[in-house]
Amino acid sequence: MKHLSRREMLASTGLAAGGLALSASGVGAQSLSCSDVYVGTWGGDYQDLLIANFEKRVLGQRKVAVSHDVANAPPRKTKLITEKSGRRGTMDVALLSESDMYEVYKQGVFEELDFSKLKNAGNIIPALRRSYSIPHIYSGKIILYNPNKVSPAPTSYADLWDPKYKGRVGFADGLYVQIIESAAIINGGSVTNLEPGKTKLAELKKLDPKVYPSNEALAAALKSEEVWFTIMWRARGIQWRNAGIPVALAVPKEGATPIIFEAAIPKNAPNKDCAYAYLDAMLDPEGQTGFAAKMGYVPTVTNAKLDPKLEADLSFTAEEQKKFIIPDLETVAKNNAQLLDWWNREFKG
Amino acid sequence: MAMAAASDRQRSLAPLLMVPAALLVLAVLGMPLVTLFRYSFNRFVPGQGMAEAFTWANYQRFFSDPYFINVLGTTVQMAVLCTVLSLILAFPVAYFLARTQSKYKSLLIILTVFPLLVGNVVRAAGWMALLGNNGFVNTILIGVGILDTPVKILYTPTAVVIGIVAVVLPFMILTLQSVIESIDRSIEEAALNLGAGPFTVFRRVTFPLSLPGVLAGTVLVGILCMNAYATPVLLGGPQFKMMAPALYDQMIRANNWPFGAALAFVLMVATVLLTIASTLALKRRTARDQ
Image (cartoon, rainbow over all chains, first blue to last red; front, side, top):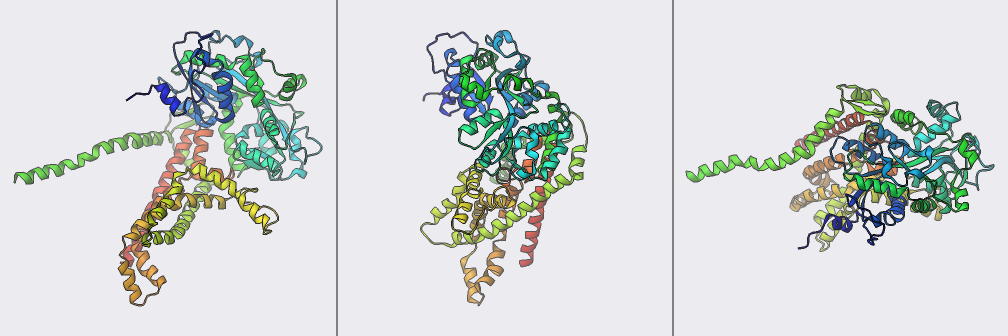
């Protein structure tokens, strides 16, 4: 009987989706002390685009086999925290949003990166750089509205509080911090003082806002025109608009809040050499361009060139960038639990 | 004499056979539970996670907070309602399956088990497609002119009841069917012969004799209903909270492991108490009937 090697086993069970070293030409191959890398990521488009743009194209040449640990962010965060005391973790690379990444980093899970091991590190947009992670893609939080139903076009988060749109504002449950932050900004609060957001949202509650369990459920409600307004990432808005959902994009005059999706290496990653190779691949300019074009996010390296028309669609203007509201990750980490409690009990309850 | 001694020795060694299973249960169930129980006395530090402590604060918070008491109340109500509904719906089906002489009996039993082959999440997704504002049910009701505007079913407690009952019904049917099958048909025939109507036969003969099955089914289904997670999340929507989703929120979304652990133990104790209460009530009923 033929015994399957671990790699064959993973491939046969679908765990190594797209991760096998497909391009075995050896061109450009450099020696690594590992041949496998375990990546914690979201599934769906995100995973598919990682495979297409970085894993097959860049890592394939280095004969690195990739396995994915696919789940939404909260269970993966819990897994990272649970495993932190173990000598050997199960993830080499963790992909999370910046606030989740910071929260987990503060608990001592991630190592400080050695940027000398990343040949593409010099191209990272300086403002997006952190000591413990690389930025992978970014977008910004804006208003999405139904152009057939909402007129004039909104210019401020405050427009969601207009009584004539009673019952037509919908939110995704997972974005509670971002929703509270938006409400705080128009009610005298700031990124370090989110409390005024609660009183502002209490006002909105009288106008019967809807909360949907997932982004997909919100997209379905926007498509059926059950709701006409939401606060969402610009990239999602572009994806939905391209998919035929009746939404238009409006950057609020208060300023958009950037969201960065990042990658980091746990201290107990079993294959650190390959983890660095994976992070470097994620900064590959061509891969970043391919990922951005499909996913609607903006590249995080200066040498990734987008088609000018696409760039105008995805990016924020210089004027809009100047007004960016930069979230305070420490405030979010310290307040996440109490904000979630308030959201569940007072706003949704 | 020697044989008797050997037999005694065998009997005294018999409990040792349980040791491997007991060790396994201890390792995979007992130890994590003890760890979680210890966590429930720790302290939560926002932004940092769990800190070592020994405090009752998490339990105090639960029992002094009307929101969480309400979540527990909703959970118990849903569990009782879904268990009773599944009992009412399952009994006729189980009776038919137990008594039928059809050559298709095995096929019917396989069909009953069939929904268990599909995961809860997938089934909930099916209900979402059926019950949504633009779902099958509303489309039909509007199409035939019964409704003008869609009626809201998805993201209501009604949707959760429908979803949970559909999940637990096969468990109730199979448990009842196996017990009803063991009731001698001639006892029911004797009662009919002595002039009892079908309803009296059911009330005085069939139902009392099937009480062990009712008890087993109620306990099994009750436990499943108390701990339901996917169905309330997907069909009840974000506004509807039962204990398992609330527990998930604390453990996974808020990273508040100590409070999440306390919720887990409150849910476990509540489930055990309800199980004991229903067992005692049904046993008393059995004793009274006898």
